[in-house]
Amino acid sequence: MNGVIRSNYFAIMASCFVILLVYFSVPDQFANRLRSFPFSSHEEEKATPEPSITVAMQTPSQNQSEPLIPTTQKIPVQEQSVSSIPETQEKENFIEQSIPSNTSAQEKPINQNIGPSIPPPQDNPIPLAEQFQPSVPNARDQENLGEDGDKTKSFKKPSCDFSDMQFDMCDVEGDVRVHGKSSSVLSVTSTESYISEANNETWSVRPHPRKYATELMAQFREVKIKVETHNQAPKCDVYHNSAAVIFANGGFNGNYFHDFTDLLVPLFITSYQFKGDVQFLVSNIQPWFIFKYIGLLKKLSNYEIIDYDNEERVHCYHRVIVGISKHKDLTVDPSRAPNHISTVEFGRFAKMAYSLKQNVAIKLGEESGKKPRLLIMARDHTRSLMNRGEIVPLIEKLGFEVVIGNALFSMNVDEFARVVNSADVMMGVHGAGLTNFVFLPTNAVLVQIVPLGNYERTCEYDFGEPAVDMGLKYLQYSISEEESTLTDLYPRDHAVLRDPESIHRQGWQVANGIYLGKQNVRLNFTRFRPILERTLHLLRQ
Image 1 (spheres, rainbow, N blue to C red):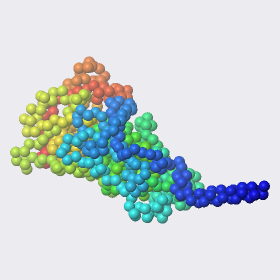
Image 2 (cartoon, rainbow, N blue to C red):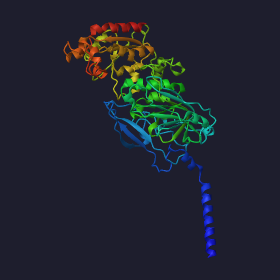
Image 3 (cartoon, helix red, strand yellow):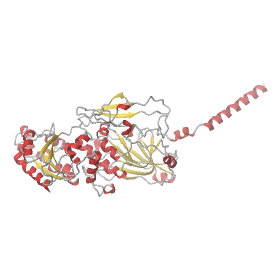
C-alpha cells in the first residue's frame, strides 16, 4: 500500500514539473496577442492559398443613393497594369492582393494592392509591382520602435479641430497606432497619469469634407481617436517611417466636379506638405475612384493605398491626420493651407502629375500664323449645345481652331488632360466637365455659359473664381430666354421663365431638376460673338 502511495506521489510531482516547464517555455508572442485585444493582428494561424488577385467589379450608380454591387473573379497577377479606360467600360475594378500568412512583418507588403485590372493598350505596360512603392520597415524602424513602439517619443495630445463647417480633423503625433477594422487611432503614452486626468477622453471624426450634409455624412464610419498607455496599447504589426492621412471615399464622388472639390483638392491641401512621404488609408473605398485618379494619387503618396475598413493589422506611424481640409470649392486658401500653398500650386501639381507640356497659353501677335485652339466641352444629356454644328464654323471664321471634348465618366483622365492642356480657350455650359480647367495652361481663357434660372453667382463661385485664382482669365455669358429649350416645355408666362426665384424657393432639388436637369441651349451666335471677340483680346495681352 505504501509503495502505491509513493508511486502516485512521484507521478504527481513529475506532472507538476512538466506543467511548470511548459509554462515558462511558452513564447511571449501569445501574451502579446492577449494584450492586443480588441485589435486583431494578421491572421497568421490560418492557412492561405497561393497569392492571387481578386477583382471586385463595381458600377457607380446614376442614383447616388444606390449602393455599388460587387462581383468577383480571379485573374493572374502578371496581366495587371495601368491602362486607359475604354469609353464603353462602365465597371471599375478593385484589386486585393492575398498575402501568405507565414511571412514576417518585414516581408509583408503594407496592404492589399489597389489598382487597375483592364488590359493596357500601350506597348510598355507598367507591371503591377511597380504601380506603388511599398514602405518596408528597415533596421532603423525596428531599432526605434521594437515590438512595443517608440517609448522615447515625447507624447503630444491629439490636436483636433471641429470648428469648420465643412470638415473635422485630428492631427495625432508621436507613437500612433492605427487599426482600420475597428476604426481606431491610438496615441500612445507612457504617462499613466494623463489617462486618469483625461478621463478616457476620445475624439470622433467622419473623415469626409461635407460635414454640413448630415444625411450624406451618415454613410461614413466614425474614426475614434483616443490616448492609451504602452501597457494597454496593441503591439505594432507593421511599422512606417512615413506619416498617414485617413479619409473617406464616397459621398457625391462619381460627379467629376465633386471628385475634385470634395476629395482631390482637399487631399492635396492636407498631404502635399509631406512631399510624397505619406500613406493614404481610405475608408469606404471606391475602387473605380482609385483607378481613375491614380495619376494624381501616386504623385501625392509614394506608398500603397490601404483599404482602411478591412485592414486587420495594426499600423504604426509617427504622425496621422484624420480627415482632410477643404476651403472653397476647387480652391486652396494660402492663409489656411500648410506652407501657404495656393490654387496656383494645385494647378501646377495637376499638370505635373500628367506630364502636361503646355505651361502658358498662346499670346496672339507673338506666334505668327498659329491659331488659338478653342475646346468646346460637349454634354450629351442636359445643358447641351443643340446647335453646335452651326456655331463651330462661325467660331472658326473668327480665327479659332475648334476641337470638341466630352468628359464622360469612363474617360481616361490622363488622355483627356492632354487634350485640355493643348487648348488656349475652353468654353461650355455650366457643368462638371468645366472642372477640367485645372489642366489649362496659365493665361488661358475659360468661357462659361450660364443656363437660364438665375445661376450667375453659382457659376462664378463654382468655376469663375477658382479659375482666376489658378492664373486663368474668365468670361461668363448668360443665355436669354430665347436661347433656352425650356420655352419648348413651359408657356411664356410660367414662373419657370418669368420668376425663377419662386422656383428656387421651393428647394434646390426642384430648381436644379428643372434648370439643370431639363434645359438645353440653342446659342444665338450674334449675341454670343462679343464674348469670343473679348476672348481674342485677352489672348493678345
